[in-house]
Structure formats: structure tokens, C-alpha cells
Length: 273
Image 1: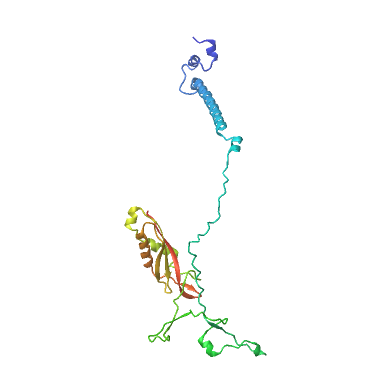
Image 2 (image 1 turned 30 degrees about the horizontal axis):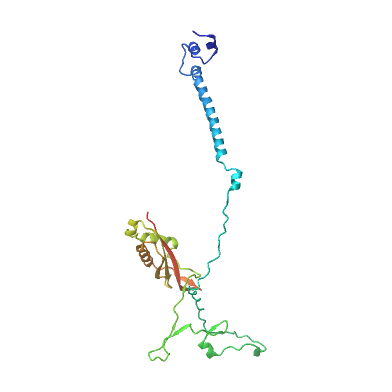
């Protein structure tokens, strides 16, 4: 039987059954009133849970956040580090002396002829015999005697053939040597012709091999050597030397418009893909 209190309670099941008797109860006001109590309960519990969570976070921060008095009692290590270089051991041998200066070629200052009223005050030009025996330069200086090499003849009288010194190998010149087509083509050549050593591939060994070689006046490569090899892989170093030696002739380097020998350094990277 429906009581007065049930009639004024819009969410009471007895009242809803009477009001919606013979109507569609699958959706609309009937479902809203039927689920009202459960929905309200979920909302209240959610709010209570959020409040408890906020309170728990506050308690956690208050307990674990360092306080000012704790920071004041914290000790900081300010031990100074001695950066003074160690004293030299007297038993160690002294460093090697610096290399000697390059040889100076004997020259005679060339004085261009100028017509002067008082010719006695000018420096007289060198005699023709002296000029024919000595190089002409911008100033007069004595040579060190190291610009030529005297090779004695079979008789041992010192009148053999005079040979010039070996050409200098430059490190940096005005026009550096270049692989045909540039650096991009050189890397393509290395990638195309390099053969990864099977033993290194099976062992998973890789790394960079740093080489140095000489590009001669005709562009050909010589004196290939390893500056720093791939750790634990001498086969990689040998393969890098082989590929460099197989390169075609380069564009030679130039110094003052003349082709010269130039050192060139090249890294070859062995990577397992």
C-alpha cells in the first residue's frame, strides 16, 4: 500500500511503479529516478575518497619534505682538491732537445741598377763570378752547407755528383690534395671496396681505424701507415690499408703553384649493420 511519505518521495520504487504503469520504462525519467540513489552514493563516495587522497598527500609532504632545521644541520664537504702538478722525478731522463733549424741556403742580395748622382754611396752589385756560383735572393746571407749532399766519386776525392735534398713532405699546403670527385666520392669508393673481415664480423668487433699516407706530386698514394687501429682487430687495419692503396690517383696538393708531397689523414669506420 502506498503511504503519504512514499508518494512525496519521487525516487520511491512503489511510487515510480504506479506513475509509470503502462509506460515505457527502458529510458527517460523512470531510469533516472530508479538510478538516483546509486548515482548519489557513488558521487558522495568519490568526494570522500578525493578528500582522503588530498589529506594523505599533505601528510606525506609534511613528513618527508626536509625542514629548514634539517638543512641547517646538513654538513657540506668543502675539502679542497690539490691541483698542483706533481714534482718532476730527478731520475727520469730530460726531454729530447728541439729539432735543429732548417738549413739556410747561401744567397746574395740582388741590387737593381738605379742611376744616382752619387753612385759611391750605394752598395756595389756583386761580381758576376759570385752570382754565377751563388743563388740570388732579397738579402745577403751565408748558407749552412746542408742544402746539397756531396757524394764522393769512386776515387774518393769528393768531386762526385752533387745531389739535391729529398723533397719535403708538407702537412698543410695552399691547395690540399683531393680524391677525384671530392670527399663524397671518396667515401663511396671506400664503402664499395671495403670488405669486412669475417673473423671480426663473427666476433662483433668494430671501430675506427685512423690512417696516414702521402699524396705524391703525381697524385699517387704512398707511405700508408696506421696511426691508431681498431682495438683487437688487426685484420681491420690491414683491410683499411689495402683499400687506401687501391685508390686511383688523387688531385695533387700545391704550394706556390707547384705540385708537392702532402700528408693526408683518413679515418675508416668499421660498423656491423
